[in-house]
Image (tube, rainbow, N blue to C red):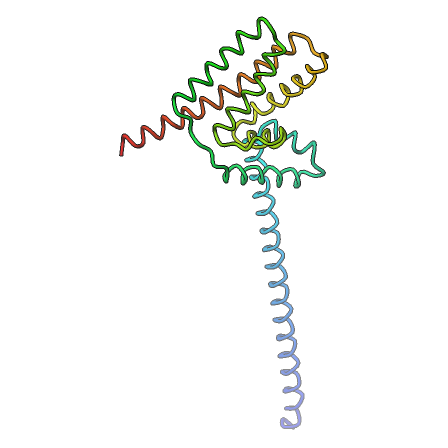
Length: 216
């Protein structure tokens, strides 16, 4: 009689073994699925955080130019890509420092423009616009086309670039005699801030390089 019961015991053991194996497989699958979901979630969160950091960095660097780029682009992603392109282009520019003679010459030119404004504001605005181009060219900036000049400047002088765009708008309107003296004064003030920023930035870098050489 005992021998007759053995097949039943073996069958029961095999069924328990199959059940245990199936449960182990299901548990493994669940663990793998959960792990994949967690990894994907981490990747998504990490990507979003990295993108937020890039956005914050671009906002800080470009200031008002960031908002302008977003307004003009079809999407925020496109605007940020365009701004990163500006930075990359700027890194490849062959910018140079002015010597003391060049810097003093530009400073005298600006002083003459300020004096000229009293007698002829329109001519002063025109000359101020030309002086910005001359200083940029002397520093090594490409100067073909206003939009490209403004984009190049925005990498280092976002606030000044915003004022430069407004000053340019006034200068162009001045050609049609559609602005008043106060508008022209505002334009000259904006040009002045950009010219002095270009000269001061160059002077600071020259002084820094000189100090570094002396320390060495």
